[in-house]
Figure (cartoon, one colour):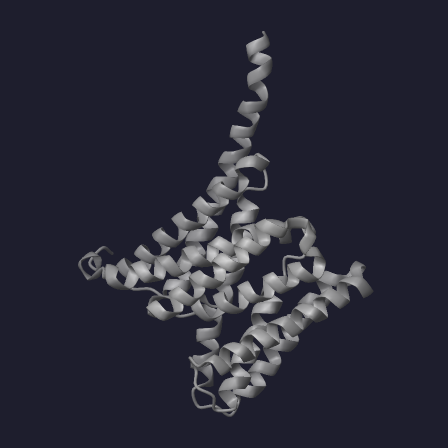
Length: 266
């Protein structure tokens, strides 16, 4: 099982880890907000819509890493965000169902666009699972700049962003991350840390979620290299296991903290 230890190439793993940390930087606070709003499918839908923009640009023959493709992905995600803002105002009681329907529709349109492409299956796999091991320094620099801008906007404006502002920040964050790590890791990075820390004290919740996600990326990427398995899928499993362990540990800590004053008073 451990015959691949000698093949660990940190020159590949470190950029992948940095990519994961950059994704977590924006997705953890967004995930906490999404979970509190009860709209957990929003990232899947927007990620798929952004991916649809990439697929459409590819179908038009545009350069895969060019600015035109990035603009197509961002435009598609922003249109999706605008649509979700309208749907939330128009039919708030069925918002989650409508978001799920948008995800399915975007997925099916993407499949239809790839139907005549001999490499369609490979493109679809890259969109879902991602290619985190092959991120480039240019991608990391662009992602770092965007993450800094989005975090400054998120923490600087806070509640003043409003619903429309939330969806815009969300759309831009997901658009960038889905092209780095794929739809599955985008969803995992957004929801799993938020789920794991839902019983944590509010003050330390964000840092704890970031730490859990970072540990999951480190363990998952290392395990995928050692076991020679797909990195995206292994990181998702590592994220799930880390989240379950953390969520099991937190209630016990919370109970101990709650019992401490009474014990002291006795």
